[in-house]
Image (cartoon, rainbow, N blue to C red; front, side, top):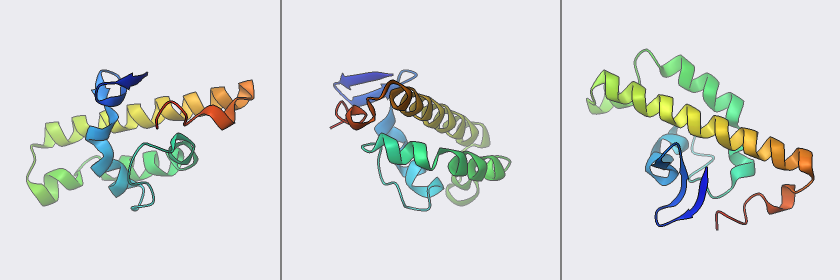
Length: 106
């Protein structure tokens, strides 16, 4: 998890903003971007569940014709991003620094 890269927050070598369209979709348009990490963490389990339901035939594959392997890889990356953000928020909460969670993202 790298903050402040030229492309913003980066997780697993990927700028998270590249996955905002998927974040919005799998959060039911409740989370348009990764600016509020606490909000991502709050909805992490629900999003992972919805992604799991969609995994066999991802929306990107069904509706946009994206190759199935690529669509699944995108979902795998999104799940990893959500998992790492959720763990980060939980760790910050445990340390008592919850109010500082999003300061590095803005």
